[in-house]
Length: 352
Image (cartoon, rainbow, N blue to C red; front, side, top):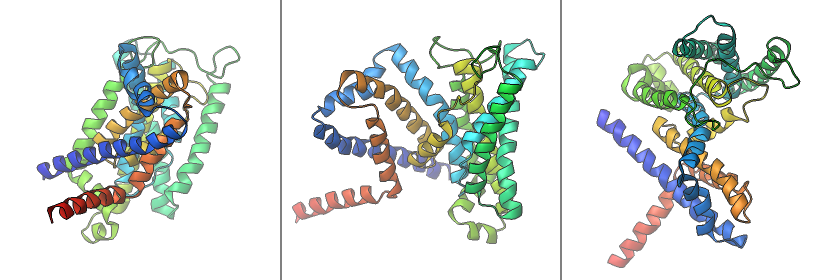
């Protein structure tokens, strides 16, 4: 069983890398249509950011929140649950963590971060569990409930920050936190929160692939009716998946506020929750795949600034490349299979 899961992960990683390669080839056509050299564009997009320590730090800093949100989406997708509320859970988790960091009488930085992390995971997990309860109890579709809860969370956070814990001044933000994750190279955003993200990848991989509950989540996601006939409680699994997903989203909110920024402000997330869904899908709902995709997205987002500076290709072209990758995955590997079949057919024709 362990060998099969390891082989499945290797296969997923291989397909992800192949999708990236095919997307870059297709993207080259668009670059040529703009009169630019694809090799030059890809150099500034993918290679130049990695030629300096500061560039690598920037890439990792941009990738860290996407690792958390990608994992949050993975655990729900594997259970066939569409948690569109990761964005709102990020805000609720960040708010709970901010209260701990601002008011908890804890002097030790490690203990303070641990307490804030617990508060963030509990608050965000509870917010996600609310949508799970609505689905279990009243059969409210999670897409509808989580989208609505996103707006509620955003409004609650804005009200609390502006009216309760706002720093003196015009900016809608809190005071700077005295404790938090340590930055590796200030003022860059990369901080020790990335270590928590990597630990989350390892723990979620073990949970999904090597524990009975993880196996049940995967089984119910693939065939809910068969899982029910085998005695698996789908309601319990929905609740567990949403709780874990919310907890991971809460850690993302804490990493951004207590690590990248050092304070919490209204609208601090530019859409990490929604980007995490794309990361999970392109990463084939595999924790390791989500990690690779998040790192690649971090590279694209930073490299996009480069191509805007050094070429005539706009930064927005990055989203074209991401869209091509998404289409390849949405085709459920059909495009890849057709390419491989065509190559096999050509090879067979030569042998004849």
